[in-house]
Image 1 (cartoon, one colour):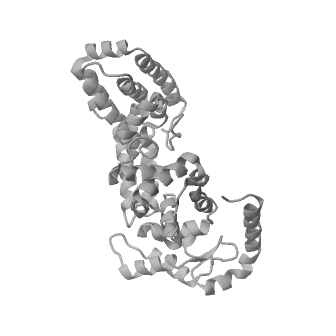
Image 2: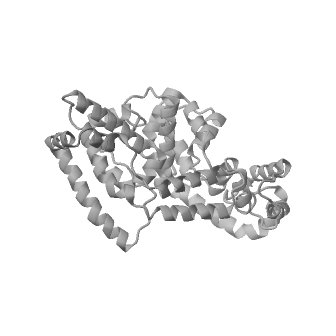
Image 3: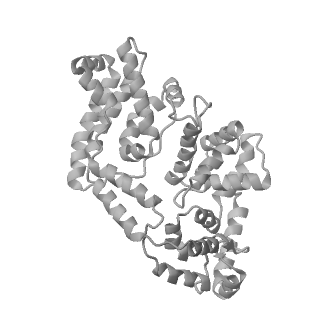
Length: 389
């Protein structure tokens, strides 16, 4: 049986809105389930509602409320803005909180999702039912793969989709239409649909933890994608990873190319994925620095480039950061920042602290020595006490 993990974001609610959800959602969900269990109810409903009801259920966009669309857009804008700062991010967060008060989509989504699932259950007996089933399948695929709808609709969509996840033939149809091609169905993917698959593998790490990469389903997906499409599918996704993304595809591309790794069986992947699970935080930070926007690098320069608190270059860059003016950029200074963070190297003994130069590493050694010894001891126990693979 396949189920979907719970979504990350849920609407902000207080006692009053929680009661509203409980008194509105579940009766509508019950109606949707009754329609799924009795096809005659669906036929009667569509006969009574006619083209207007068909348009509402299968054609018109879900009413998500203006605040939710605005919040989604402003978050994307801030993420792409090379000059965004903490104030911009706080403002985006405030808008997101405000959007959480708009429950329009969540009041109806259980009913609409249940009915869309009802359309794809069973075999169509006439042209109308065939058209409804086709529209419903496309809509369910869009909701399940589009980041905006996936985060917005959350658990109600997860629950409504269960009849598809439990039915192998329906799951294959869903996969062939672009829903879950990483695990089932047609592996003859386009670049666009394959990108959706690899991005969902990224999201799974965000929703769970790095060790999820060793799960048989995750392992199977990586093995099949690499066997059929090679490293190119991973490289395309690695290029769009950001400082917020798990670095799984950056890591895989780097290690596979560097060591010329080959994989004949699924088991061949296990040592490499085990290495990813215990990857030191300092290494993850170095990967992430390379994919930060310049605004994020400025904001994070005291966390990423050098662990020596007295690093002279870091202190100089902090002073330059204080002189930044929106709309005025200096390519030379930005390159100086990028290069400084990119050349950061981990302490070879503990692999948990990083430095921009040997000078900084030596200067910080008296303060770092006690924690270095503790970190080395913890790491040895983790590897010896239980295989990281």
